[in-house]
Every structure is written in structure tokens, then in C-alpha cells.
Length: 297
Image 1 (cartoon, rainbow, N blue to C red):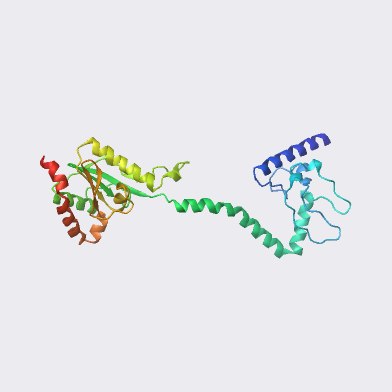
Image 2 (cartoon, rainbow, N blue to C red):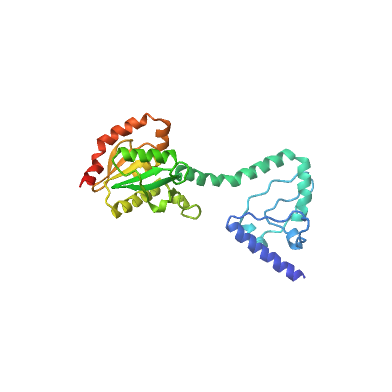
């Protein structure tokens, strides 16, 4: 029996050494739990070399020393002298109760310190996440004659035929001399970002990745059919459809050879501010030749 206890204690020494090398805190049972299996004797009687010593005349417990190399190999540690004795887990139960009565303020301070220390390393990842936020948006892609349309979806839901914003879009297409029955691309499925919700690559879906994805999709669609102009309708469409972070409204930018980008306010903003229709009409008259030349030809 003594041989088995010695073997188990040696195994426990190695286990704790490996856990401490991995910076994992080692926890030992302090009391019996309800309906739990009884703790093993060699664990309750476990003695660590760097534990505090009991002074015969002291009423309080001295602070614990920092872990040393002797904590990994307690077999080579010096034996306690006559004036001190190593504290086992069983004895620490009585010492903890005594300490709470003698100096409760010190115990409260120590517990607050123990709560603060583990949370300190977590501040760095949180700062990195805040510095590189993941954009969130939903865009509907449509085609009207030789124009592509990339439109914001504030609610994330695809356009319905009776939606006021979709009716406004049809009115704008009629004013531009285009078909007021646009075709829904991607089988009507909106482009939702972020694409990945879990996994190691989730945090890589930053603004640059979103812009590259949106522009790649536009490039594929403009190569599939003749395209003269791409309407970017809404803040998110303008931001991720163009190659610049801040693109002014009603401006025209080059997307590819013979293809231009036209930036417009969101449909919801126009519904809330009807006077914007006047600015859209003026810009449309100035740039309408972009798609009318191709239609006439």
C-alpha cells in the first residue's frame, strides 16, 4: 500500500510540473463535495515545497512564496526544520478558517488581487479586435439593361415587389431610360457580410476583405454581359463597391475599361428626404450618356 501511494505521489509531482510548465494553475480539493467520490489520501496529504510554514507562536499565516525549481522536483528539497512543518491540504482547511477570523480584510484584498491578475492578459486581444472591426452589411445585386445595380438592404431582407424603396428604384430606372423591371442576380440572394460566422478565419473579414469580395463579384457580373455603368446605391454599396474608403456622392469613378461607377444615396434616405430626388436628377442628366451610348449602339 505504501508503495502504491509513493507511485501515485510521484505521478502527481510530474503532472503538476507539466501543468505549471504550461502555465496552468493547479487546483487541489479543499473539502469533500456532496455526492462526490472521496478524495484520495495522497492528494489530501499533498505537501508542496514552497508552501508556507507554520510557526508555533504565530496566529496568522505568512504569505506564500513564489514557485521555484523545487516546486517541480520536491524530492530534492531540504526537509523542514524542527521550528517549521510543511502544510498539507488537510491542514490548510483549518488554517484558512483561522485566517478568515484573524484578518478578514487581508483575505478580501488577496481575493481581489487574484481576480484582477488572470484578466490582465485578455486586454491585448480585445484591443486588437476593436482596432480592426468586422463590417456588417447586406447588398442586393440587380441588372437593368447594360447597368448593374448594387443597392443597400438595411434590414438584410431581399427586395419585395411592393416595398416602397423598390418602387422608388423602379422610378429612378424609368427616369434614366432603363428597364423598370430589373433582373435579380445571384438568384435574388443578397450578399451578406460577414460570410463566416465562426472559425479561425472569422477575424480576417475586415473592410479590405469585404471590398475585395464585392468588387470581385461586380467584375464577374460585368464580364458576363455588356455593362456600361454600375450604380452604387447606399452608403455600404458606395464604400465597398468603390476602391476608396470615402467616395463622394454623385461622383463617377472608373471601375474597368468602359465601365464606370456612379455613387448615389440610399433609397431609405431619399424616401426620408424627398428633396434629394432633385440632386439625383441633376446628376443623372449629367451622366446619362454613359449608358445611353451603349443602348443606342
